[in-house]
Image 1 (cartoon, each protein chain N blue to C red):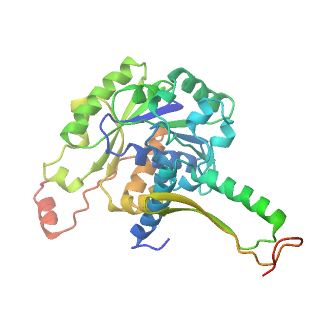
Image 2: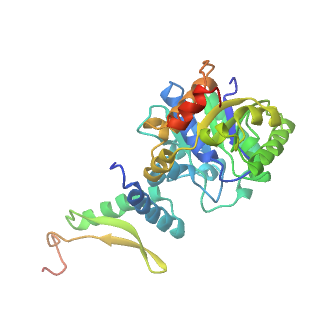
Length: 266
Length: 80
């Protein structure tokens, strides 16, 4: 993706926006970029706990926007990955504390003054002011979608709103895909979702219990060894322009699966 | 980090983060407060193993300062 400033959004809550932001941010930093991840969910801060950086929060995004501290005081450097920084949301304020124009200026400074090569903005759920503020400085978007009815519908709505806001480079991250259910025809495949939404995926992340464990301990999955972590890493490589093939997730090596393969089934 | 008991880690992290949320103070600020407090205390006592923590006590969130007075103050005050 050419976009340096990318909003991670979905419309629907609970589909994995924050996990996606944390992992793709950490993956891009591992790949050599200078990355800032920004939590815009004012009042419901969570990117800090997902990344395991909660104990180091002193100042937050609203403090920066109101000029109560310098940017360098609010940015938390992740000690596990070089060139990865978190700008946390305020937990005690509400969404009205964020002015889209001021936010746009702060993000511009991060790129032009502080030399960040990529900014990932974790949007709040919904389509109201919080989302619009998050999308205001964005040149591109990652729309996180789960292969189920309400998530796909909300993603379509969000894609329309992003286009209306002149966010032009839009890609899907299909999250929590269950390969077995796709194989048996009981879950939408990536091709189905592309058909329906008309937006290209850039990542397909399988459902993985490893994500729960890595979130429990506050360590992004791309820093460990899990299937989802590998899929997020591959997504980051594609985002940087590498041609990374999608792995076949169907690793159903059981007897029935072998038979199915033998007889040319799914 | 021990594998297999990650929920224990999560529980500890959640208890701490919720205490700070309820107290409406960011954890990093308590770190700064702790350092400032200890600096002031050390001006009067050679306090060694001091700790300042946020704790949940029933409905209340309290700032707990544990300052063992290893040695009596140099001048004035009572001696143990």
